[in-house]
Length: 160
Image 1 (tube, rainbow, N blue to C red):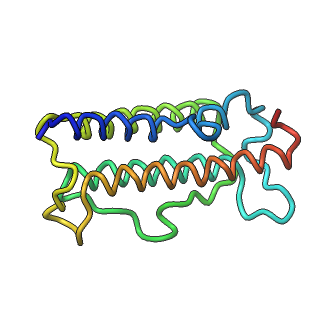
Image 2 (cartoon, one colour):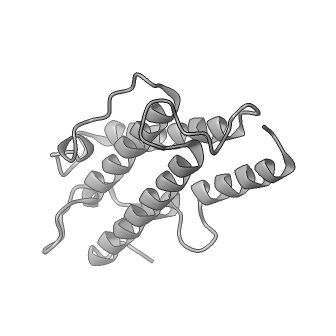
């Protein structure tokens, strides 16, 4: 399956998933965020930065597991994808969440880089999803919520 075109596509997908070409990355959006602002819900907004970050983690994890495990059961929608708590339990929980986002993204990219991976083959379990679609879904979803994190940081006076 590892044709020259597929290798270029995988390289491009990896760059898209890591981000930074057209906008701030997820890492940029959370870098240097004061701990006391992680759980603040600005007036008129429905969630805190913590809730957005945890939502990104849960969703990306779900997509990764769905992509590699036919027996994976996704959380119920929408409550299973959004934390109720507005603030992380502690600094360790924040760091663990960020580490899982990074690790799960690496594992998903490894799926794309597998020489036997067929980016276009629909998963046997699902309704037409394939690895390329799921890669684009992670990129789109994370990018959307990264923008929201930056907006919240602006509202909180914590963005450059």
